[in-house]
Each structure stands twice: as C-alpha cells, then as structure tokens.
Image (cartoon, rainbow, N blue to C red; front, side, top):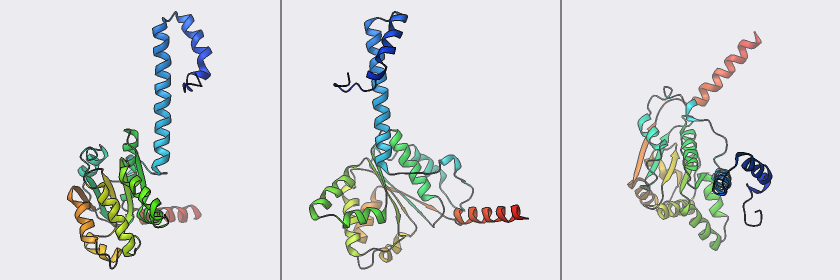
Length: 244
C-alpha cells in the first residue's frame, strides 16, 4: 500500500481489518472505507500544502473585525467578496484606504477562504513581489512572471507604502497584464490612484496599468482613523491603570 501511495491506509490497516471482521463488513464496505480514509487524508494534505504555499501567515478572522470603527466602509461589497463571487469571473478587488483600517486583514481572510475552497493562492506585499522579480535572471524572471500569472488568486498587498522606480512599475504592469481577464487579483493600497505617479515616479505605464487593473474590478474605499493607533492607546491606558 505504501508503494502505491496509500500512505493514510497503511499504518492503520491491521486495526481496520479487525474492525471490519468484527462488524462483518462485506469486501465492498471495506474498500469503500479504505477509499474514504485515503481521500480525506489527501484532501487534508492538499489543504495544508496550499495554506503553506499561500504565504498568508497569521491573521485575525473577520469575526474580530470592528465594522463600526471606520467612518466609511462598504460592508456589503466586502462580505460579497468573502463569498469569492469574483473569482469565476476573473474580476479584481481593490481595497483603498489609509493605514490601520484593516485592508490587509480583509485581504488575508479572502485569500484564506479561497484556499479552503480549493484554489491556489499567493499573498505577497508589493515590495516582496517586486524584489523577487528584480533579483531573477531574465529567464528566471519569465518563470516567476508565469507563476504569478497562473496562481488561482494573487493578492498584492501594500501598494503605495514605498516608492519604486520605473522598472518596478513595468514589472508590476506585467503581472497585472498577464492576469488581465484571465485570473482574479486582490490589491490593497493606501494611496488614491491619482497619486500612483508618486509611487512609481517617471513610469510611463501607470495609465495602462490602472486601465488593466480597474477594467473588471470592484473598488472599495475605507475611511477613518487607524485602528492600530486606537488599540495602542487603549493598551497604554490599561497599563497606566494597572500601575496605580
């Protein structure tokens, strides 16, 4: 059994045979039980692999999201995105808002839902994605671009937190262009689109990049004060009270 890949069944075969004998299972019942165990184990291994490959890492669940904190948020848009309705149509989701309003948390939850639904997912910050592409040889860069183009759902987080050169803009355009009308993309940014020329100074492809990104996209804006700042202030207040 191990030799033909039935690795879930092999370690517990003796116990199953004894149970089947006691329960007087037919050969068909025994085979069905063995197949169910193997299928369940392979699904579990597949899920673990996809979670590991996604690079989502640690995140808070949406149950912890305080919908009342932002002064502006389109809850219906976000909750609809969490159902993954945009994936089959290869539409994009763009979350725009200042730092500390939960854009990354929302994106991570969407990516996690996609993994659980059986999709291949990759979650990367813009900085890590572009650094990864920059350091490749020309041949390696083509392979990387293909991998970014082919993954079921790609999330590019934190576009706008750092400034990049025109070469980086070209690389990001290539990623977006290769996924255009083929595969969905989730992108978070703290800068309105009119400021992307400041994120990628001197880049000639900004207008075309945004045209591809936004053509089939749901753009939702979140406004308000940083939740992290509020949380930090609450923790500081609690520490002061304990010292009294």
